[in-house]
Image 1 (tube, rainbow, N blue to C red):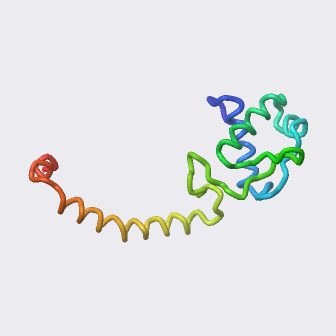
Image 2 (image 1 turned 30 degrees about the vertical axis):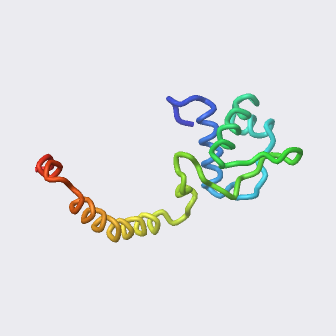
Length: 124
């Protein structure tokens, strides 16, 4: 695990890496606190805090009486579209670039048409 981050954040990142690496898939149950703590070499309270972080980011969900499961909704706050969970990152990047080529010229046209002479002078 990388240094420079809080231990709970590093544990949460490790669990996310397991999800991304397809060791855990949406709907899969996470190991219990004892198992995760042993596997990651940390205490149960650290695992518990990491799970709380992942719940707040919609990466996992707690089902009372059943356990903690990988969420089917991967709307992570730092990645609201859940792009880190997509397999074909090259395709995603290509699609996003194509979208920019479609949208940005129109936005630039609108911005130029709505600019005041003072704003245009400021850009020059």
